[in-house]
Length: 106
Image (tube, rainbow, N blue to C red):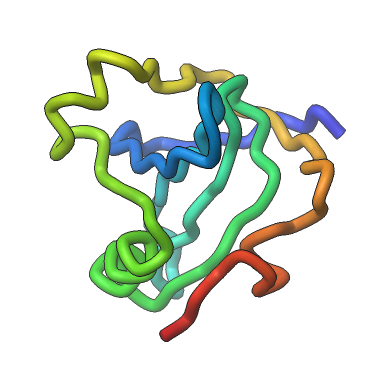
C-alpha cells in the first residue's frame, strides 16, 4: 500500500472513535462533486466516499458524528491534525465507511 494520496484541503473534520484515537476527513473538489478522504491519526488514508456537492458531504459528515475542527474550540486543546504526506493504508476492518457498515445515509 503506502501509495501517496494528494489532498489539497486542510479544512479538517474529526470523529473521536475511542480514547486517544480519531478518524479524520478532508474533502477536495473533483469534476463530479467532491471526494471525502478518511484517515487515521498517522495520515494513513483508509477509505473515501464521493458526494455530488460540498454541502452534501458536510451534512453526511455531521450525520455520522464528524465535527469540523475549526468550529470546535476545545478540539485544539487535545487533538493535533495529521499532517501530510497522506498515504493509502489498509484499515484493520476494511473500508469501514464506503462499505456502509459504519456509515448512515439517512
